[in-house]
Length: 160
Image 1 (tube, rainbow, N blue to C red):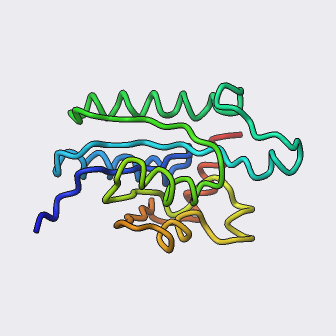
Image 2: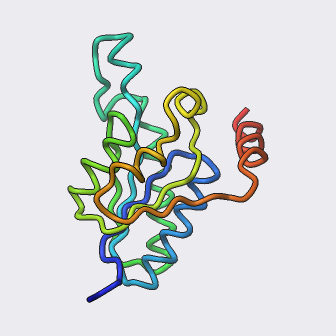
């Protein structure tokens, strides 16, 4: 039985914990000689409720994700990972990550941060990472930066 991961899916959203998750995913991909798949999901649930229209991947709301993925992909390639794929998607993040794209890339490991940028969703429905762990068909590594309250405050301060 082979315990090496072949297809890693790393979810990023611009948060500090997602950055740490990306770094860990790169190290795991290097050790396992894996393909690294990066995903950024624009949560469109609120868009469809307000505008009755789901944004298209060419809309400006996706620009941040595209730029973030370009930087991460460049870093991963420079680190020595030979194959890096990047996806910008729309929808409910935990469904898109754990169900749609994990199956699409045949992921055997999903790497994500413990807390992302959306504090309201975390309060109301639990974190995206919790949903990924519960609904995923493969292994999931949830990465923490350390003291999550300090990390969230620092991340928010840096964005303002």
